[in-house]
Amino acid sequence: MELLQLQYFLAVARVEHVTEAARSLHVTQSSLSKTIQRLEEDLGVPLFDRIGRKLRLNEFGSSFLRRAERALFELEQGKQELSDLSSPEQGTIELAVTNASTLPNILREFRKKRPHIQFHVQMLTTQEMDTLLHRGEVDFCLSSPPMQGDDIECQIVFIDPILVAVPEGHRLADRSSVTLTELKDEWFVGVKKGYRTRDLVDYVCESAGFAPKYAYEGNEPTRLSALVEAEIGIAFIPSTAMNSRERIKYLQVENHELVREIALLWHRSRYFSRAALEFREVVVEYFEALSKQTKS
Image 1 (cartoon, rainbow, N blue to C red):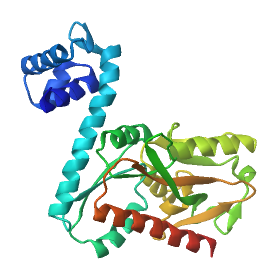
Image 2: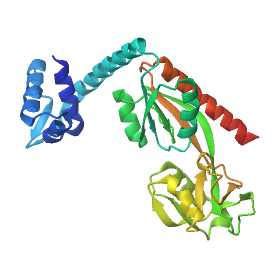
Image 3: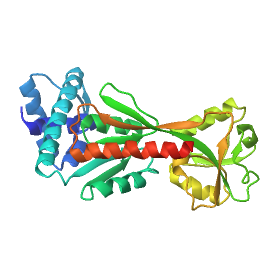
Image 4: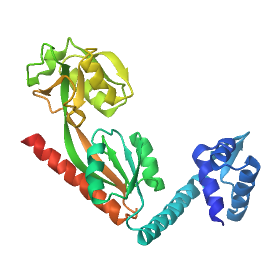
């Protein structure tokens, strides 16, 4: 069994389509098909059920996929460990986030300690994070909501209050807090259903007796502040996404615990360079300081 066979098998297993897998690997379909066929001959069983050009992992393939992913995961960890031993002051930390509002400050603090370490950051869903963590393709994830898994370490690093953002001049702008029932006739701007914060806000508002009316629903949480400032609607915005430079007032929500949890995630078996371990410390310290500021 060859390493190339495993790599080709994983590529096909993930998309279950020879043409698409060949394109991602930059090889011909013929070469890819022959490699998969040799692997099946070596194993003595078919790994896929073939339906025209489409493939479906069968019982043998699904079982072998878990082992193959684990084997390549361990090889990748060994590669990273050797890289760290040979060039401890160099390297790249792979990150994934569900929201990037706190990331600039965290990276700024880390660069003071490790100016030569590079970063590659991806904005992902929690499902995508889970996949890349198990493939060994990311070091850490900053996720809200947290994720659970047998191989995933999940450390809650911050309890983030969700505030009500209103434009200057709004009838509530001179207040420091507001009850949810006072917002029942307002128009809101927000992210689409399916985002954790949106689903939580809708649930809490419905428990208070009303369903929020949305003038805008989108996929970019960072755009909401600009829409509030433009008086398109008010918004529920986590405290970590506040921007003091905008002409917006932020109000606490009375009588309801409206918060989101931010978690730092990593794979239990992943090898971490010294730089990666220091990065984890910086993340924890940053949110500890932020928590103290919030309480004071």
